[in-house]
Image (cartoon, rainbow, N blue to C red):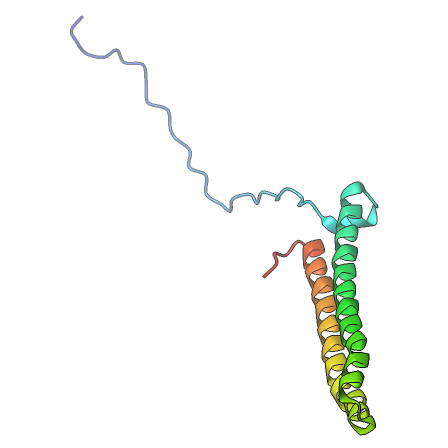
Length: 125
């Protein structure tokens, strides 16, 4: 033994692969739309969530409407003037009702937009 390594032959040649790497298919994402279409328990939960948010907006608008309309007789009683009562009824009440209707429509549209984003898998802002 002379200390020299034993000759086993030439070293194996390493292969270098050049080319485009394979594209890995992403795993299918969990789609809420399929859950809703197939009427699964999760899809039902999504739809119930939308319905609850729309009901909450409707009940809030109804509560404010009841408050505004319910206080009109008190306003008429304190004014005790027919002309002032007609002014309140004809001019003061309608801007409040228009503002309430505008708020309700905006809220309902936002609920639907948020639900559509959830179903499409896009994050909420």
